[in-house]
Length: 112
Image 1 (cartoon, rainbow, N blue to C red):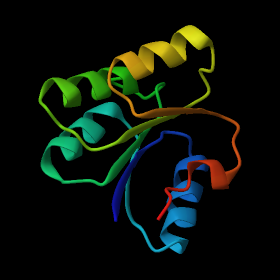
Image 2 (spheres, rainbow, N blue to C red; image 1 turned 60 degrees about the vertical axis):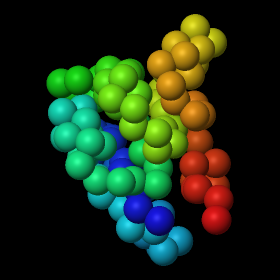
Image 3 (cartoon, one colour; image 1 turned 135 degrees about the vertical axis):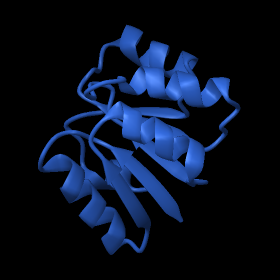
């Protein structure tokens, strides 16, 4: 399974990547929305994990643009923004799930 993580936190992104690779996933990590969008169009990911508060394009915009171009890979928002309206907006834009930080690693680990 190939995953993309878009997370700009200097330790969370690498820690999440390492944890998922330990579970035998192939993981790409980017720290901004432009790179996430470009890779989302180029690579057939099995899952994209998006932070919302990314530099450049935010995760909501990345999700919106991917869905507008009929990209159907699952998208999980992993973000500190946990208000109900924010969760609803993310899901309305096409995300498949929404997980708030802080979290236990087992919550964001894709199920095999």
